[in-house]
Length: 444
Image 1: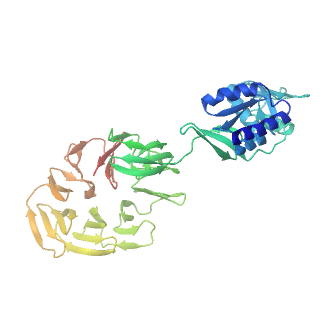
Image 2: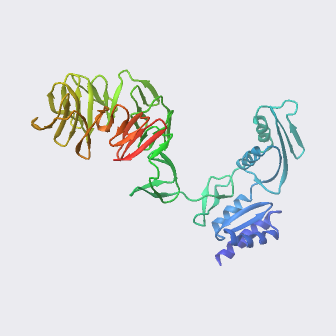
Image 3: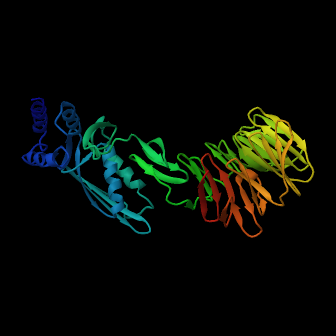
């Protein structure tokens, strides 16, 4: 009964306006029920009622029927047609069977146009222009802006339901409701709002629940991944963040980008007065042997310059040019261990254990007492994998915690031979091996 009452009300509105209501209305109404809901066509304009005729839908359609109707007769390049149609809708006019307006556009090196509306015939034939600015100024003078209704009806093709939207330039729009969706990434489930997101250097669109599987470890054209950000060789790119940057970064987070020679912050790119050696856990290591937090609110200076270091879980071990070996707690900002050794070539640590490489041996020390626990008489270098030491026939690149070494011919990441090495970035869950053509992603 309510639906019949609302339809009778709408029908009376149609009858009250000459030209809006005719027998064709009934035909279109019945046929559209099978498609996606109820529609009414009048004066060449299609009005979508929604799933059923409601009082609110009737009031919305009635408000749109108060808008003037034009018949746009357009002749010219196709790309301008949609632009002109949108222009009239924004001005508050519906396009259908109404007052005729003829617009002609011809494009060469310049643009010629002509407008005929009622008794007005205006053109720029004597002085063609480079753009359509004057044409739109002419249309502004011919067509006053009308107030648009506050509400429109939308149809969601995914849920097959209609709903009310506001501040539109059309009486009817096709638009699905955006929400949040679950994305499973290699066994872990995350929630993302609908839209574009960068996940491990790959841009995806989240518009439904997704399950992402690692199909290829190589991300071509990506030269560094930093959480939700990546470097394409020229720009650091994120969801709402894109800046030009001259070299592979060591650190990216929101509005801060740090590399060896450059520092971007608060919209400004500056060259580092002191080169940056590394960035880890929100701390920056400089080539002069000092260390600071990202925001430079705190700074600690060592007595010498480090040539090797190993970072893990907020602790850093350093090997300095003067022979000193230091274990440093970044959180407490204090030394946990310090010793001086001859001919030191490298350093690394595991829980309560420090490894020091010298010219002829590798020593394993207790960090609490400084006592030597074991000596490896190996003429080799070492890396630390899965809380154990691994000897390698080559030279380990600094910093040691990135597990990259060189045997004189080839570079290796742990046991994986790599070519075209440019950088290694250590993420929360992955190592990112930056090569000449892209980035290898390797789970920790």
